[in-house]
Image (cartoon, rainbow, N blue to C red; front, top):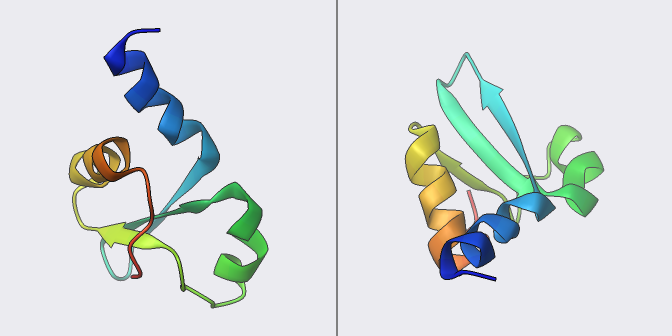
Length: 66
């Protein structure tokens, strides 16, 4: 597996959600989807730019609180 494939594999565990009112993209782990949609943003990441959010996940591979 190449280095780029390894980075892309980190994205499989995340779901992405766009909030049009805040104009913000959120990313959170699949197992946390119920918590996220019930208002618990702990453990999620957010950024106005989707590309930056994806890059952060690929580089760090861990969530930073929103």
